Length: 460
Ligand SMILES: [Zn+2]
Image (cartoon, rainbow, N blue to C red):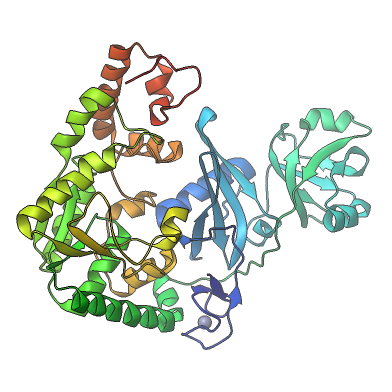
């Protein structure tokens, strides 16, 4: 799904770079591999995490980077710089902190000032070739701040990185050890990283061929679906990048189209402003479906929605959208920014479908086969007014308190939108008191999962 042009130093979407014509190189990512651009706030976060741990930032100035969310109990992102995975960051909810997990290729971009060990050159072949642990007899030096459990770089006597891994002991104990493992090294799939500066405009040029093809295919799909179904057309716009790309495509295919906005009353203020801006920019009238009242009504009896108890979508979205469609059109055809790479469920979804809970709406997904990177490059190419929240480190935009969000994201929102969060927290605390739930239910975000063991008495 991802290639890299080592001449232009940009991602590419095919085997040949559209900008310079040279062959690009395929980049291996951990599946599902739906990587997205790292915005300046993402780059700052990664660099802060690496600087705090290793004393050096990972992503050099002027270099394009991508983030790839990988399966994790909370949140983990692979960092792609210079066309290869240079490392990851992982959120540890219990400690409210991020951890830096480098790959050996990180050494293309940084030389660790902290958290490293130096090994005897004689030990290098077994460490590098066989993935052997760093053993006490082969240890030449251990940086004094290394603590058991730390991620560390393993260097040879010349200072070259030969491996990465996790310290098994504290530095002061390692110095006294005569035998036993000091660092357990980690094996990863091989990656190639190269240095070189570029801009996102350069990336758009490298990907131009694929973007044009994708656009032409989506436009013809939209025209075809609209021609075959004699229904009033709209674009379901959420304030997210995928629905914005869908709106751009529908405009190209059909001209003016209204936007259908499901306002749950739990939107970020930035999202509401973006909906207005997009409406003005594209001359698209807004048909609003308001779910706020319905949400709080259900909340009164059910408590907050949870990952495994998501009554919210039906109450605050589907119901109000159905009402809005009935009033405005009776029945309609909605183009929706759904993509198969978003989830396994969407992978199995059709490109044209009818939601069983929303029979008045025929839905169609023009960007069903697009990757997140294709969507982003398309928005960059079109200079589209995307939601500024993406530039603050959020990768998905929906209700601000969505229980399906990672704790890492919810903690970030708590800091970036304190008033919004405080209002939600007050509602949670009311429910907690009313039901006699422990403080951890609100404080440690346990409200997000209803089926917490030991809380069977929690019944609503
Ligand atoms: Zn190129």
